[in-house]
Length: 109
Image (cartoon, rainbow, N blue to C red; front, side, top):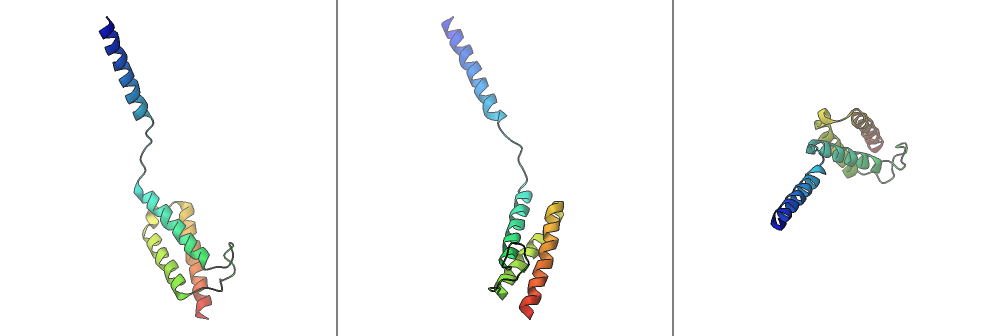
C-alpha cells in the first residue's frame, strides 16, 4: 500500500512538473524580424549621427565622408530587407533615404 502511494505520488509529481515546464514556452519568432529590427535601429542611429539635433533638421558640424558612407551602406542593407519590413519601418526607411540625400548635398557644398 505504501509503495503504491509513493509510486502514484511521484508519477503525479513528475507529470505536473513536465506540464509546468512545457506550458511556459512561447512561440518562436523568426530571426528575420529580429534582423530587420536591428538593421532599422542601426540605420536610425547612423542617420541621427549625421544631424546635430534629434529633429534631423540641422546638419552636424562633424559630418565626414565616412559617416555618410556608413549610413548609405546601412540603408542599402535595410533596403534589401524591405519585403520583411512593417509599414512603420518602411516609412522610416523612406525618411532615412531622404535625410541621407539631404546630408550628401550639404557635404558636397
